[in-house]
Length: 110
Image (cartoon, rainbow, N blue to C red; front, side, top):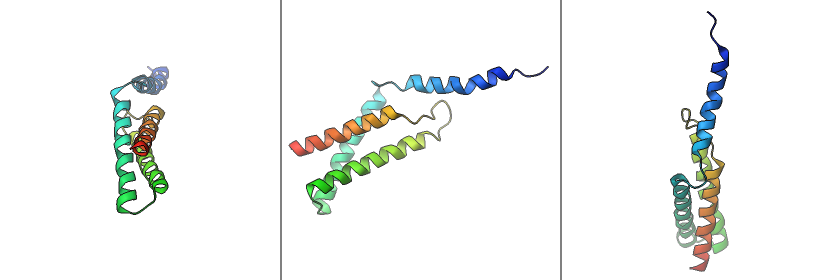
């Protein structure tokens, strides 16, 4: 009896749809991305400005760049995880950017 190939082709798409369904806009994961990016942006801005002697503008760029770069690396590493968790999440990057912006704005106000 020949194996049915139709089910073998459907399995990856089912796994991807499960991963996509788990990537909600309002999820604890997004709050963690926001908070981590917020804290990391503030810490790196402080480090570059106070300890490395960069001016405020350059420390903002450096802090945002380091934080966003780490967010990209994290999402890239997520793609190497086994199914159904191998998902590069654009929503996570949006949460990272929101945390970066909020961190910069708060430090500018403070």
